[in-house]
Each structure stands twice: as C-alpha cells, then as structure tokens.
Amino acid sequence: MKAVILAGGLGTRLSEETSIRPKPMVEIGGKPILWHIMKTYSAHGINDFIICCGYKGYIIKEYFANYFLHMSDVTFDMRFNQMNVHSGYAEPWRVTLVNTGDNTMTGGRLKRISEHLGNETFCFTYGDGVSNINITELVNFHKQQKSLGTLTAVQPAGRFGAISLGYEQTKITSFREKPEGDGAWINGGYFVLEPEVINLIADDSTVWEQEPLEKLADMEQLSAFRHDGFWQPMDTLRDKNYLEGLWKNNQAPWKVWEEKS
Image (cartoon, rainbow, N blue to C red):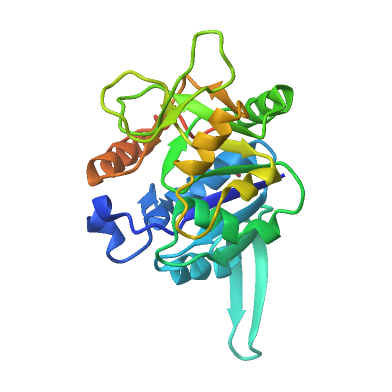
C-alpha cells in the first residue's frame, strides 16, 4: 500500500522556520517532521511513499538523495575515489517525490500524483502533524466500511474541518471546513482512499477539504475512524516547541516504532 503525503504548502504561520525550508522539513528532535510521519506508517508496514512537493521542494529531494549516506557508517578512500559502507541504518523506504507546484491546492496536489497510484487503495495525509494513530486498524476499518474514503476523526479544539457524526455512526453526513465553536469531531487527516476519489477533483484550484470531501459526505461514501489518542498539528512555533519538548523528554506519544540498535 502507498502513502501520499502533502508537503508543498507555504506554512506561513510558522514563518520563523519556513522562510528557509518547507514546513515538513522543520525538525523535531533533529529529524524533519516528515520523517516522523513516515516512521509512523513504516511501523505499520507501509514503506512506499509519494511526497507531493511544492514550496522549496528541492530541499526535500536533497534530503532523500543523501538519506542513505547520512544514515550509514562509511569510509571515504580519497586515493582511489571509493566509498565503503560499513553499516547502514536507512529504512526500507521507496520514496517518489513529485513537484506538484508552488500554488496548487491540496486536492490539486493529489490529482497531480494520481499516475503514481495505480488502481489500489491508498493512504493520504498532511506533512505537518503527528499522531499515534493505529494505521493498521484504520486500513482494516476502511475495508470493512466499503466506502470510497475514510477520514480519521479527532476531538481537539475546533479549528479545522468539522464533520457531523452521531455516537453510533460510521458514515459522515456533512462536512464543513473551519467552523465556529469547539468540541466537534474534526478532520485529523490520515485518510484511506479508493482511487475513484480522484474523479472528484477538478483541477489545481480544488481544495481537498471542500468540494471533494463535501461530495463524498453527500454520497454517504465518507466514513469516520475515531481516534481518541494523541494528535497534534504543527501550525505555529508554539506547536513546534511543544512537540520538541515531548521528544526531548522521551514523552512523544507518536513514537510507535522501535529504535534500531
């Protein structure tokens, strides 16, 4: 299964960091938040990634171009122009990096990478937040629901797209982007989608959280996977410092993988 990660936005609310690098490359514990997200998927056996690049996407490409070298012990023999790798600690990832444009909206970015998806169910998420969501349970839930899309519903303060969801419901009946008020179940990202959803995206100007999700909800083809655990977006410097503090104090709930010895 493939996981598509949005990594092309400007991240203007985190300008202290994003003036020099794309938001997904802002570091937590010395590693880009994008790396943390990928490690979460990898812990559940998903190692095939499609990264939707945009703003300063070359930095993401350079990071992965040098990733194996940075994660290995090496000897450089300058006399013979040779490099010997002693130990490698790189993950078994396959990473496809696609330039989806600097100004393309979230839906447009997904449409632009559709040729890399094939005709299979795939995961889709944002490149600026971490969670201890159980990806395996999410995928299994999606298969049971037989919907075109499954959205992970979380319950922090209401700043994001809210959904109508009764206590026993698994089908979403309405979707509203950034409503007023607190306490609603909201869009936490971490989607599982069928390839047919691409047909609901018109062009680069399509915002995934608007027409496509609203249409899926109207069609009763959008299911909700409740996640009561940790979920935290990194929208501001305060968010970044909060996540950094959790990591430094070995209290990062999203660290669901084992360290390599």
